[in-house]
Amino acid sequence: MMGILLATILSFPLFFLFSALALIRKKKTPGMILNWIIIFLAGFVLCGLFNYLALPALTVPNLLVENFIVCLVLVPLLYYKIGMPFSYKKPHRSASGFLIILVILALPVSFFIGLAALDNSYQSIAKQESGEAEPFDEEDTPVTVSPESARNKVQKAMSVVPNTQFYDLGKLQVQKIDNEIMYVAPVEFTGLWKYLRGKETEGFFTIPAADINAEPEFVQSKMQYTNSSYFNHNVQRTIYNEHPNYVQSGEAQIEVDDEGKPWYIQTLYKPIKLTNKPDMDQLKVAVVDPVSGDLQIYDPKEAPAFIDSPVSSEMAGKQNNYFGKYVHGWLNALFGKKDVKIPNESGTENIVTPIFDNKGEMYYFTDMASPKENIDSALGYTLINARTAELTYYNGKNNNGIMDSKGAKQIVNKEFPEKNWEGSMPILYNVDGNPTWIVNVLDPNGLFKQYAYIKANDSDFVVFGETAQETLAAYRMQLAQETSNPEASEDVELETISGEVNRSLVTSTSSGQSVQFILNDDTTIYTVNASKAPLAIFLQQGDRVEMEVKIRDNGIGTVEQIAIASLEKN
View 1 (cartoon, helix red, strand yellow):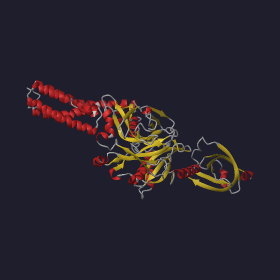
View 2 (cartoon, helix red, strand yellow; view 1 turned 90 degrees about the vertical axis):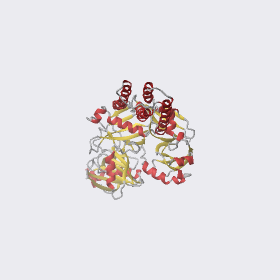
View 3 (cartoon, rainbow, N blue to C red; view 1 turned 180 degrees about the vertical axis):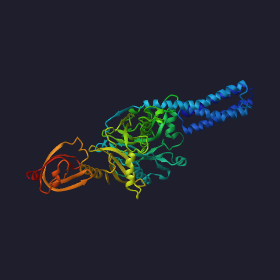
View 4 (cartoon, helix red, strand yellow; view 1 turned 30 degrees about the horizontal axis):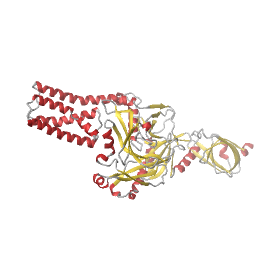
């Protein structure tokens, strides 16, 4: 309770000043002193109750507002009760008027100081820029199930929770458990009465985030300190009582340690002096034991290893906004808008999408667009490390006019207007050297229906499929048929292959013709562009070929050079 008590005490200095001015000039009587005590105690209790419920951080703007409100309510009441009406004609009343003017002026001054501090917030971001826009590799980074689909499944499984009528599903959080990417969500109380009856929640759900067919599992683990608990068992209040000078970023989330024990995790930041604006270099993470309420504070980099996201998605969203808007200051963000970038709101959590790289580290992905309307090309994208808060901006200069995530979702939305299916969780991947948007397709109830693979620089190049593997294979097949596409990734080495053709097929595309064929005793599907080998369109069963090929692990071979024995003899 120390944090709430301190916040309440610091809300009354101005009241004490106004009271002193009145009591010094007025002949004091026992009734006057009693009125002052009654008014002060009533105001102190009400202000304390407000602080207990609202948990305002101890920052200069917050304290100014609370002092102003306390004075606005209590001082006129005090002057009325002691028989001292407001009048600025007498000298001793001029001090009160001057103090009122100072208080009123302090609020707009604080506002403008906050505007000036936006530049400092931008500078406090640990950031770097890269000219190489390197989308994720679909083989290194798994395509995760959209949180809407996962939440829908977990909601349907709520009946397994004991006393399920007391609870609802809490915040869904992605993390790694035993090297598997999982969604984790606690069950939370639905209201005060249910909290008074239940006292503690029953546990949490887990569901794999990379398997669309997976089912949720309920883990029983009693928790007394939660987001939905009341009074001193509330997680936010537990943290506030110990650290009222920190601002809490977003809602606390649970993460599970190696022994299967859940912990509530909350990102904190210290604001820049005299403002509420975040200092991105002063981040902390609070770790709360949901059983005992024990609290530990860490620097994000030094947080326990089981915590994948010491930096919350809310904090990452805030970083993206500051990074994009205030690159040349707040005035430029309002008027000139030079180099201003706006984060697209296609993310699954507070405009960002959490994703893991091939090293198992968690990042927040967001693509950036121009502030100019009706432009759907991506300027680039950011990755924010969920442990270090370091932001890397890939400026996309090497990607010629790729669409942004909003455009990718619109392509999906227009594909199924009669079913009202919509795109969700678009993520930019690198498929055989082609920037590709991979989008979950969901029905109106949030149930997964399909994957969509969209070539980011060609809105007409779209492949739909039931599974990620099936859709990827079909997408690669279509890529191989397009003569305008770059070759397979450079990490695939050339092989020399020879054999007899078993079947062949000539396909016409918007950019030319391609030939697909298989060899005897070989299941690999080979593709050669007719622009490289014009004679290939005449391939027939029994033709003997010798070729240099890049074969990927999905059984598709891209032919670089081909010699057709029967045709060369002629």
